[in-house]
Length: 106
Figure 1 (tube, rainbow, N blue to C red):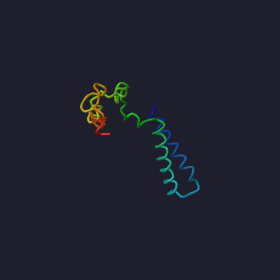
Figure 2 (tube, rainbow, N blue to C red; figure 1 turned 30 degrees about the horizontal axis):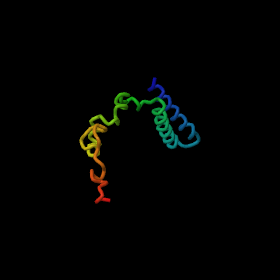
Figure 3 (spheres, one colour; figure 1 turned 90 degrees about the horizontal axis):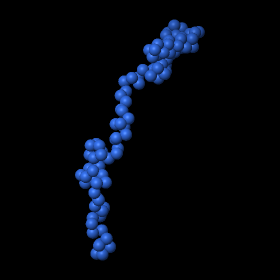
Figure 4 (cartoon, rainbow, N blue to C red; figure 1 turned 30 degrees about the vertical axis):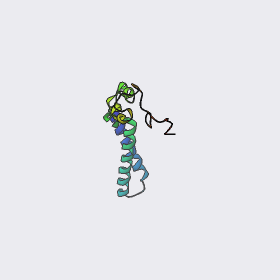
C-alpha cells in the first residue's frame, strides 16, 4: 500500500509538471515533467513513510535506563567526577580538599 501511495504521488507530480508547461516546447515539457516527478517523489516518500522502515527504534527500557547513572556508559562518562565509585555511594571529597576551612587557610 505504501508503494502505491508513493507511485501515485510521483505520477501526480509528473502530471502537474506536464500541465504547467502545456504551451511550451517538448524540451520544456520533459524538464517540467521530471521536476514534477522529483517533487512528487519527495512528497510521496514523506507521506508514505518509506524511509521510516530503515530506522531502528530502541526499546523503551533502553531509553529509560540510559542516563540513570548506573549503566556502564554513564559510569565511564562520570569516572573522574565520581572518583571511580558509582554515584551517591559514598561521600565525595570537598572541592578544595578536607582542610578547606582551616584557620590558616582563611
